[in-house]
Image 1 (cartoon, rainbow over the protein chains, first blue to last red):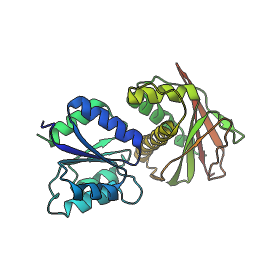
Image 2: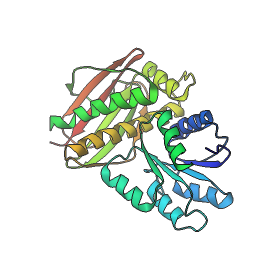
Image 3: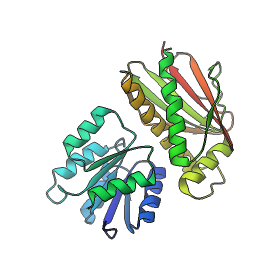
Length: 124
Length: 153
């Protein structure tokens, strides 16, 4: 797994961004960016190239699903790995995310091992 | 209120705190809560809509939430501040999500709003519906917390 890539963490809760950053740093990732909703995430991605997006679902302004659909419709980011990390665990949510092109899906609460395993799969 | 709505929140709370904060919790006996005064010093509240409308509240004693968030961050937290409030919001969100997953398996589908957080000694908890408030107390090695579940009749 290439840990030199640039990772964007999108979550409206600073708590979750901090937990994910801690886990990613433990894995070895160093280039970590943050956004607190989908709109801010798109602004970050316009200014610099992002190699992996890890996003929550339920956020104000623009949800993680809307962010995913917007990214998949963009030539530059159509194939960027996108990991949804969310408390939305109902079947319909997973189906919608898969149909929108999510790379993988982690349900909160999660262990560091679960994040590491999913990243290993989508970044191999 | 349908008692089948209660257990998923107990299971979800235990699962969330053990997984995210490595804290063992013991659930006590549920009781009917008559007043609006919070048992804890910081409370997360989230509205649910679906087969029934209601709210859940998770209210933590100060010592308890400081230990929980310290474990989540791997860093000692010493006071109730915006970081603790944010963490309580996210914990409430996760408990709601886990419980809704279990309820879906029972054929009861709910949607959740974005949680709000209240901090301070003896604050009030306002549930959006007028049903009975079922409180479930929990104990940890570092103080306790209580879940309140309130659904319309």
